[in-house]
View 1 (cartoon, rainbow, N blue to C red):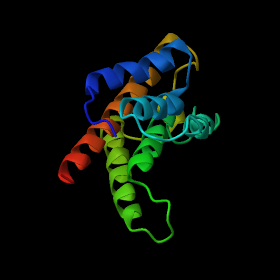
View 2 (cartoon, rainbow, N blue to C red):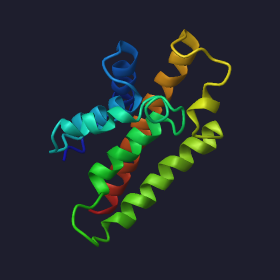
View 3 (cartoon, rainbow, N blue to C red):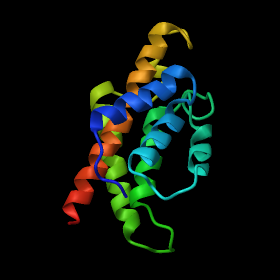
Length: 151
């Protein structure tokens, strides 16, 4: 895993993926983290994130940028073997990312976050682009911190 990453470049890359329309929020976060840290997983993990945009498939529930961040943390800290205690670390850092977003924005509900906005409007896009970059950057920050602790 590459640990020589620039947090600002990660934020900007995720934002650009969303802004350009190449990927939606959750996909942009996962792709950015996968590429920045050179994670040895298939690009199919990006496809796994495709159901989460606009609050899980357009249901406007949990913010896709957050779910993409949680998926990214799972790629680094999650388990693949039954009963592996690594799940505890994955859950801890995922909760941390959740709490960071909730503290800053008061909720994770896409419907509430985008209240009074027209989906696809410049105002809504600006906000969601920023959320996408923010969650990619915060997930990366957590990954770097935790990897540094394990040295």
